[in-house]
Length: 417
Length: 41
Image (cartoon, rainbow over all chains, first blue to last red; front, side, top):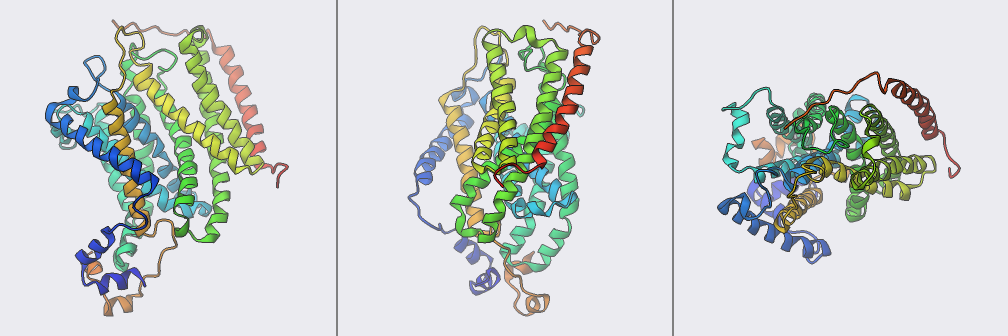
């Protein structure tokens, strides 16, 4: 039964929505059993955070105003969402149709990452109601990097929503709305790629003024470029990792033909990631040489730096290359996990671990900060799963009625769009 | 107190040129390695 008929039979938008909100599949799954208590505990902590202030649940202080929520949720989460602009650029601008089957899932992932991870920024504001200030230009430095980043987050969320909107229109059986929204996709992609390249580097630029605070092995005037280039392979690795899980969890949703083509897609993504990592490694080596950082490599910080650069950039880069050449999907999957760990380590090094590295009192995230982060990740997965089970994200788009049919049997939802 | 130290760009220039040339040569080989099929076709 098509979606449109389903909408029509149930006589209206609200009954359709009610039917869609009902849980589907097994309730007592391992993920649900783990994630529900985390989400409930996280919500409880957030109540305390918003009633008693940041200091009641976090270890943040005047010396460490930005902690785990910024370092992991925002800075790392946005890098992981880089796959959306990379893939939409490849498909809609470079016309690489091979990657079309993963566009919807990738854009949805990117959209949810921004909504949840960038949205987690609000948790870290001492006066969260002031979050509107950069948008309305109230008492805000127009040439500050944070001004750019906040505007870009907002605009990019709207752009990704526009890129994903044809899927929602399809779900609602709104043929005309889908046609109009689909015609806007190319413009949205161009705008989205521009925004992404600027705010991915902008996130790095936030740390430019922290030169005396960041360990010299991680500080560079080129942090914005490092952030931009690393967001490319972070995003591609995230697609490989997330796609591998999705193809197991949502295997009923995927056309069997697509299962076969997914291996080719993974190899193509791995190739892109390998080249981006190779270039990134060269950039880092050049800065290492230019700043004569070999004098800093001795000791614990040096070993930590080498673990990041060699263990979690160069080695996964060669693993990707080996996996591509020998069509070894297993090695590519392991490389994607190592790469993601490398991105987490790099972003946390700059924002938390190597930040105020020589301070007498160090910052460690409280258990509440970690639980809230786990809550944000779990909630994002819940919403992703809800959408994938209901909307044509992984499965083939269902046939929408022709315009003639639409005039005669017009669903109330379509009429309202 | 913030102390800015300006790096003498000529001090490491020779090494940087060398690294750049190595990178460009290696990039060509790396891309060729990725494009050619391996043994397990």
